[in-house]
Picture 1 (cartoon, rainbow, N blue to C red):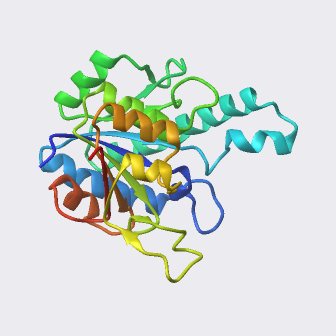
Picture 2: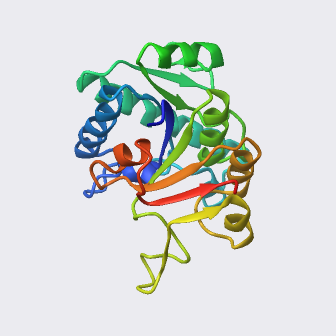
Length: 235
């Protein structure tokens, strides 16, 4: 079993079917899934996107420059982080939000040593604000934070069962790739994470597991080292 993991959640996962940006049902569900990991003795960190509220790439369509748009996206991830923190604590977990963007008193500033200390005490640490810099995705933020805290594996939770050779939502003949390398994923243009995130994982020998977030217990299986979803490794 992996001792310390970082879970990457997309902002879209938080969307409510009614169109509301944050689903209470999902917050309750993900809290129970994370609680199962913590109760198993796993140290859990989380990075969440902000796409359910605002994406920096949308800025151009609104006449907003990209840098400002990315800053708005960072704030969206902090909103989601606070929502997750509240849900986790309602589920009996102890959670801390740490932000790459200074938003005192809403969240602690990201300090590597303090984050590791929280994890060692059994607290769930939620990293908001992306990397704190424009032009970087929350995928890259997840890879960066995972490396910084010494995570044993990065788990990316998606809406599908793993990594496919093409979009399974559009193509019925899409084939699930159970295992591949970062080099192959980059060369083949597989849509798993952006190139910067994949390169960062590869350079630091950090394996990536892609699972279906909506399959209860999938994260537990991944943390236990079982074959679930897809695995991306250096070799």
